[in-house]
Length: 365
Length: 197
Ligand SMILES: [Zn+2]
Image (cartoon, rainbow over all chains, first blue to last red; front, side, top):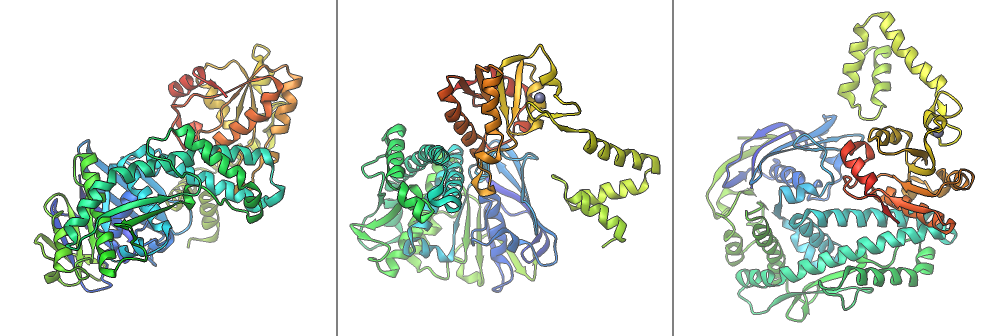
């Protein structure tokens, strides 16, 4: 699996760009603000259909363009693939995969899996549970396309239910709410089971990854806290998890009507990473937290490689300036496996050789 | 910016679904180059359709008469009703040649985000027809989207107490799409494999 070519127009600081990267290591070197990260962002957008910097789509369109257009040619076991994305300044985004509209947006996550190491990955460990939920859901979608569909459907149902409560509050039409609850329970149970299955599969890989990036003692594990699904395991039958959520929604109904939003479900669950029995979020040192963040990305990489039989595309956005030698070695272990894009302000910081691209003022040579 | 009359037509085209800036310009410059009589035929066709087409008094399909061609056809089975979101879905289902009953057009699907609840759809009219026309089976053929599924479940709950069979098109339709995206073979299979709700 690799990116054979990338064409951008009107994207961030690129009026027009066309590159054919190497199938091995690509090193993007240039001063800060030259647009190195923008290229990594474009590659990741082709997979995740959103910015890894959480920028809204409109802000990706360069100031002098009507629309940003991203085209990616990918080589995979199933043959060549072509991803085309148009982000107009106003109006709806258009996405085509091999000339056709994909059945759902999560299709590309599995067709073109990408793992990105970003400078603010530490936030996933230190921040609130939303970032960790997103990490799990995104990885689950990359591993299995149907999982991505369930997650998308859950989010849609949740948005609709919240919108209904927001408009109607206490005067909500009960039969309409009943039906949304039914759907929320179905998809919510699926999302829970997908997450638990993933965390279970991830546990040994996570433990191993942590051992390679940190010489300190300590075993990295996880815990999944949920107010409605206590005691559920990956083997809990779907129908049982569904009833649990249905009952919890009913118990909270009065309160949800008053608060005008949905107070229980997988969108409120809290996945936590533990070092032995310490919460990594607030009971670990900065150094340990950095190792945990790194281990999560490494584990994602190894799981995707195992599932798809080929390594995912690896994006390293200015990570070496932050890493000491020991942790950098953990990342280096991924180097010869598949295609890699590294961005750095200083080439001598990058402890690996490869095709060098020099980035400045909207051009790449 | 083009000359105001040119720009005006570009803007009108660009407001149509599925037409971007570039296509709107291409269409406009095409029309700029055609004969006057061809241009009037186009504008007449638009106005003529707007003047003559209205909604069928019974099923809310498009029609130039009081009743649409399906409702007016006495050979159609009045005991089976197929519920669709929009009038254009009828053409898709007719294309399968597998359905001999009548239709009911809801006018959309339940979507609180867009401010559409059951009262904004023709669900009350549907319930009224069930009684009047002696319907014994309702097939809900809303789109395979979150909103379409939700609408189907809502209708099933509303109808079930009346002792009428309610079924939903079998899965196999592309998830998240419109009925338009299903080919006739898939849709035909979905119709014959419909499941009771
Ligand atoms: Zn009619």
